[in-house]
Image 1 (spheres, one colour):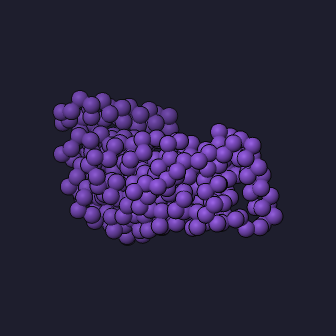
Image 2: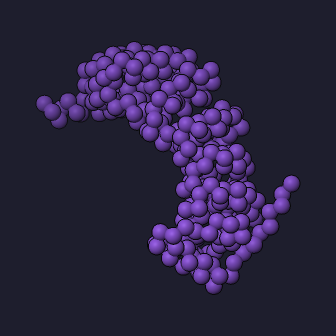
Image 3: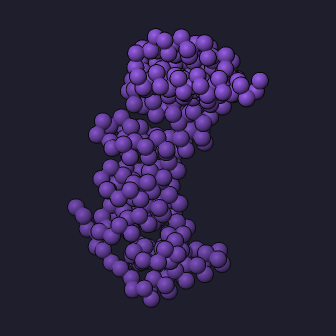
Length: 295
């Protein structure tokens, strides 16, 4: 049952509230956290002035967990997109796991892109506690391309803070989850100097899903250890899937591996996909030009 009642402050009331909160925060004094005060602040999130909304949001953020129920209700139920956006952004500041169900519901049902981005940002701020919810979005075949993109963005943020959280996902039975995991971990593997990182790359390189093999190939194109990468990429040039072959040619070009020109030329002779042929020729031309410039 929805007992949410939308209220709105006048511009003068919102200005007085923002100034009051600003003074309190500046003086290091606690913000009033009784239900009426919280409701008044949430109502102030509908003010059209961005600076005032930000001040009110910071006040609610300083209250912390006591403000979460009112913020979640406003985020879910308000007819004003400004309020829903501001409520979701404020929940990023608080990062309370109890808001996770409401954040997930709002992310899946609110059509506003800013609300979706902010709810995902709030989930990302929780780290490990939100992994299950975020991966459920990745697993859902009905998730939109934008929703998947935001989920992948959140996983990258989480992986940057603690890569170990995502490594279990590489063994998921769901290929969508495995793909998201290797993409998110890519920024953490700059050089395959440790055996564990090499194992992770090899695991994705041998994945039965072509999209995941392609992600592994793209990752290889960013690594500092080009010699180790070259061995794997040379093998991937003849992958059964055209997406992997195309990604391989681009990675070899990115690495500047002029020694791979004969292999690229051989694959070009055997290649049947016209798009891959174009990419192979591009890679050959770029690498040959690089050789000429350094000779």
